[in-house]
Length: 526
Image 1 (cartoon, rainbow, N blue to C red):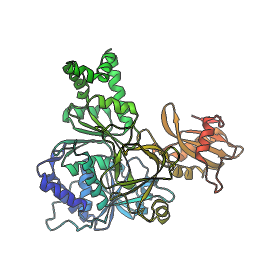
Image 2 (cartoon, one colour):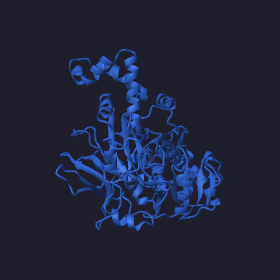
Image 3 (spheres, rainbow, N blue to C red):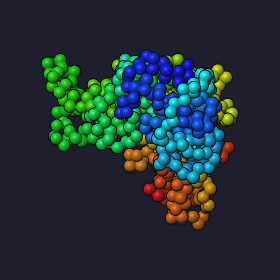
Image 4 (cartoon, rainbow, N blue to C red):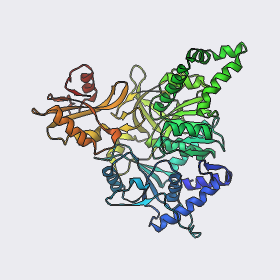
């Protein structure tokens, strides 16, 4: 089955179920929108096998255009809305993309491709135009997972990969019901938002409430008006919601009472005070609309106290683990199962996990195999040799351990990928390749560090004699503008000493970071 066939399956099963909630478009109505958009794109020259870019916030035209490209047999290049024109030019060039469907605010004088206004009016449906007979091993989406400069890793996911992820999400069937609503404000171009805000509703015949902003007031207004049953978010946002809720209760001088009720609700119910417990908890749950039953976290680690807070409120809270190469979640926790500490769950569906080269603590490298795992990076045999073994297992680059319940615990990353509090990834190799071009810089190490409780990309620069902090700061600021703002290195240190390297001249990032913590680098810009 390909993705368009999955849509048709839902149309037959749930024709009158609303899929686009805000727009009141049913699954049946979605098909007409898709066919009209496919007719328009065909007139733009799109044909089977073409790569078509998608550059948009969460607006209804995003899923409509997505399906329309597949209807014509095309491949979708998912583009992050936070990147620069230089990055878009590189990405489209490397994937031979000639057309990008985008909101007009993203238009610029592009090199090598043309823009199509994703919000433009479509032509009348060409009744003769039929869906292209895609095979399940045809490429459905392309995503960049290691930056857009140097030799990038481009992830081609097939229709088989996407449909398999959809099938594996059946793991969550106790909470996800046909006709109910997903809140979709996580960007659909990101694998987490794509999996939980698009594939899951499609699999279960649910509606999606698209939101293109992360403005708290807009989100809260949606909660109050639409009352979604399922809300996915990155852990940082769950922390913010929790903090705001507690602050609001403290302002009313009621946090002591509410905290006591949350922590002792089982006992209070046992002695006949269940109505009091429900009254207090319902008031807090009403912030999310009053019907929220399942909260989903992913993209980064969730603090234990955050999960505990929402669980005490009576809402199921699950954490997932996955990556672009696996179409998002391949492991997921089950809150109704008593877990050891706070794990990110057990393998879902047909996914197999192996922990190799364990140390004395049981921590080792996670390798995975399954139907939703990519078959290989696009045009990158070196990366494929490094990441896949002869049995088809893929090396995630993450260090994990497994508890007695068979659930995995994250222990660290072999790769030096920086995961910001927002869940976005920053790739040191990409930034280091840019910074090394600065005149007077001999070497540079970029790594994850914490400044005032916030995770940042931190740089330590080895420079030649005569370089000043003022000159370096100016050069770093200019270089930062070549990439998206969330990747910027605004905290760094400078030294005239050489950075520690291995025998193959690779920087020892962990040593540099420790030296920074130990105070070796005192000439800082923070």
